[in-house]
Length: 181
Image 1: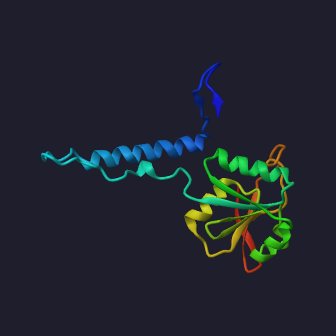
Image 2 (image 1 turned 30 degrees about the horizontal axis):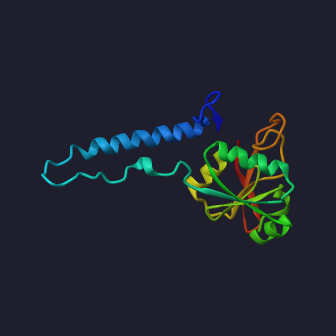
Image 3 (image 1 turned 180 degrees about the vertical axis):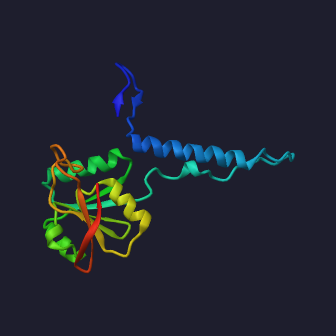
């Protein structure tokens, strides 16, 4: 957050378009819920207390738990990308990330620099948020998804995006295309 002006205690928070869209949808749902509740009943001595509205829901419905090397700079950038989009992230430093990848069954040909767990699914590498959201919406019977290597222009990686990002799914060592982003 940045100061609003010189000698000011007011702070300005910048939101991504995705976070603003989420907030506006939640605010709209809260307004609908309030309108449906109708006027408060007129009873002397009683105070109308509305039930919690949908606006009380958190902006991010899931948390990404990233396991990474303490010295990896691009992992920090992927975390910054997720947080800028309103996603909750926890970070775990691993002395040897490859041991963690093996324990989760990530096929070696899909390895990247970091491995995450999101609501029981493995997310390997610089996977775009859209792929994670699709994974959680569809809930396929897979172990996880991965963006192999560290493609330029992928979330958290510098450089222009040279081609579509081929996100793979995997289950029990079998790899299939999940989607292109």
